Each structure stands twice: as C-alpha cells, then as structure tokens.
Length: 411
Image 1 (spheres, one colour):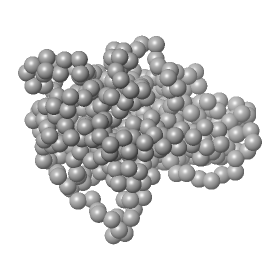
Image 2 (cartoon, helix red, strand yellow):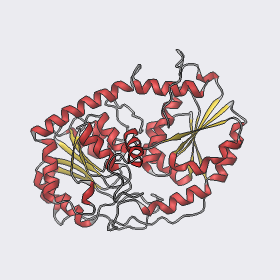
Image 3 (cartoon, helix red, strand yellow):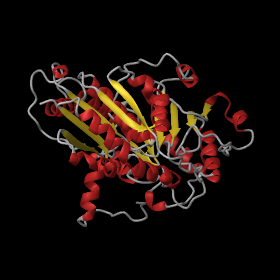
Image 4 (cartoon, one colour):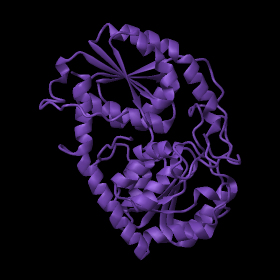
C-alpha cells in the first residue's frame, strides 16, 4: 500500500464511527500474506472502521486458526467464497529451486474464481456505505478489477514486500545494482508487551527455563521445504554448536493445510533427540513465532528472511542468521546484513543449490550467540528494535502514516 502524505486531523481515529466507511481486505491466500492484511485489519478496526476479510473458506479458516485469537474483534468479519476444488500437491523438498511452485494451482484457482463472487459482494456492500475501501494484495490485482465499475469504491494496492526490496528492484531495472540472476520470478507490528495467548505453547515453558539471549531459533517460513540432506547438515551443526535452540522443522504449507494425506515428514538423524538432550527443542507443528522472538531467552534467529520474519525479528531486537530461499528474500538479506548490520549471512544467494555444511551452520550459531561480533550485532539489533517500536507509538512515523491513511479514507 503506497504511503501518501495527507493532512492529519486532530481527531483522526476518534470520530470515524460517524463516517459510513467500510473496508474490504483481499489477501493472497498464503500464510505470510494473510498475516499482513489480518494485522492491518486489526489496526483499522481500532479506528471503529468495519472490516470485511474475504477469501476462500479454507484460507479464512487457516487465518483464524493460526492468528485469529490475536485479531478477535467484532468489527472484523470473515466472508467465505466458494471456488472449485483445486489440486493441493505436497511440496517437493528435492526440487532444483525453492520457489513454492506447489502453490501455483491454488493461486490460479483464486485468481480465476474469486473475481465473480467478489464483484457481487462489493456491489451489494457498496449500497450500505458512503465509501467502500478495497485493500488488496498486489498479487491479487486481477481479482479486483471490478472496482472501476462501482462509483463509491476506492482501491489501494498493498505491497507485501519491504520498501527496500521494491526500491532495489526498480533500480535494477534501470541498470543499477546486481540484477535478478538465478531469481525466480508490512507485517504491521503487534506489540506483545509480555502478553501471551491463554493457550500457551509448550515451547514457551521451555524458554522460561533458559538463560537470557542463549537460545537460537530456527525456522524457514511456511512456503519452503528443506531437503533431507540439508536437514541432516543443520541437525549436526546445531548439535556441534553446543548452544540451546528451538528448531521448527515441518513441510511447507500446501494449498489446503487441512488436507491430510499422510505426507512424508522431514526426518532427523537417528538418535538425534538423545544426542541433543535438553539443549534443543524440535517442533514439528505451527509455532508461535512472534512470542518466541519476543522472549528474553531468544538470542538469535536463523531465517529465510521473508519480510514478515525480518520485521518481527528486528522489532524484537533479535539478530538474524540470514538464509534466503526465493522471491524478495535475497534483497531482504542485503538490508539485514550489509545495511542495518543486524545479522550475518549463512548462505550467499550466489551459492545456488549448494548444500550448506554442518560447519557453516555451527559457525553461524556461535557467531550470533557467543562471539564478540554477535554481541555487537545484537546491540545493533536492539537499537533497530527500539526505533521500530518508537515509530508505532503515538507521534511515531509509522503511527502518523497510519493515521494519515485513516484520515484520508474517512474524509
């Protein structure tokens, strides 16, 4: 969503309940994209603006199942649209590229079959509002083309990548920068302030027993599956580091996460649990990432550098071990490691499909958790985190931008 500088009224966010404005969110049906518009929905609803979150029944259920408790609000309504059954293949960990091509059938089905029900929904809703605001993921632009035919509808394009990645891409198109060699093809911060959901994940109790900043958290997001030989190297590297860790090891999401066909699960080396003892915790399910990153025991994050993960880690002041897989992640890695200096590189993008050795994993963990270099990077991360948190407080830059947008759509 483009940032625009509108005049901010003194009562922005206070009197919007007098203005008959409604917002319709149209997310891309993938977890990271669902998260972003869910949290934007929460923020806008705090200004007493009704929000309608639309999508397939499967993906609305997915959104509520994973983060719904965090955005529970009577002003946010979910609307399920029926689409024909689509293939939901399992991810292939041994593919020659890491782009989640197994999700293409889902994306195609959504692009083709959501247009008509969305058009009907917008037409019916437009008669109930002075102004209907449609905020859509940039990858769902083809689905919302009907907005041009409805008089009182305004459409806003939400870019799910970082401004840095988007700007760098524009520069590369002009011949500045490194280009997209071998490259296929904001999460809005929710401050926890120590608060956690009533259903506490077991890993949080384990974290409570660890020393401050002593635990390495490892997770590569929801769209990438790591091949078996790479899992083995990661496992050995973590064990040899002799540092505490939480490792989320699970297959990437399928198009329908509720379709269970007994997929093959990632395997660890035989006897691995006995080898690591109580030094490590392996999680094979959805994990509460933001809670883990906000915990005082977490000292580092080995990540694929998806933008959601980068923002969460930076906001919480946690340094990163960057391991980009696809899409905007290589650019995010540059931002994290070379510009902000809040992380180290585990695998350079130009290494392609080369398997990262156990030694490299071990060294990356030690660099962040126990080295002097890691301490310096951690201080940088903490400063960045403080700046991010200030920006969302009253009077902060991000807060002002949000209020400016609200003031504009409720004008």
